[in-house]
Image 1 (cartoon, one colour):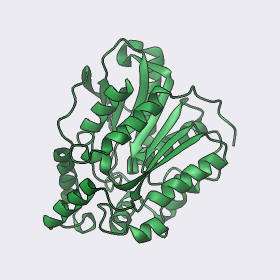
Image 2: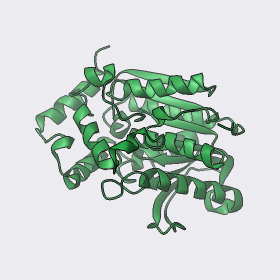
Image 3: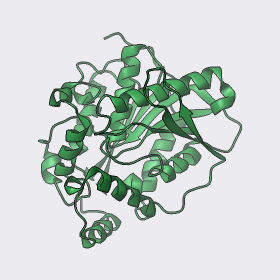
Length: 322
């Protein structure tokens, strides 16, 4: 299908600015550029409560920042851990503030947005370890300190977009492998699942659709301290030996996205391993549309799909030994 007219208009406007592509920027320049997406998101929704916390680490690492969005109501609410995108190099909780507010309201869920450490200063496995630690903290707080989050520990969901979707998939694997916490669902929004650049969607959408193949090469280059880490399942979940025993998944992809095929391949592998999967491809849409809700009407469809899945999130299944 042809590009959504609003998506085409956005791409035309960005091209007219004649800015350097991400792969030609310094890390500092790319991070500054990512902040510009906030201007594309429209007016942030009001939520009942927003709080920032620092989670002291017991591993000797720096404290991990989280931003907690609590919707109106009594609770307990579903508990959604959100990991922002940005190739593990750019982005932060401020860039995804508007989407997280919208998710909290639409899903009626407590959203915990995680400020994980970024590469290249903190390469793999810093990001997945931070996200796993924050998920474990949230699960413990929901069960043992109910006044902290007012959330239901039996409805624990991990979610993220792009590299954040990669981290959500990694955390689901880590929770399975490490015996907890019990995750009820994973929501993977156009996720990175492999360190390969040879799929048809990488070929067809290599450039011109916001995320480019060369930008992904740059992100992976910053993320991995050693190229051999590309085969680690917590870096490239598609390469995991087994996906059995993982929580049910909602996988959202976009037609004009280099990552489309690897995300859909991951959904296929999950389904083949006996994991319930809902796969939805958004035809005519581009990667990163969740960060542009003020100019792309269909980004609201992403929020709606996620909210419906969160509201109906099933109870955790027993872990299957692998």
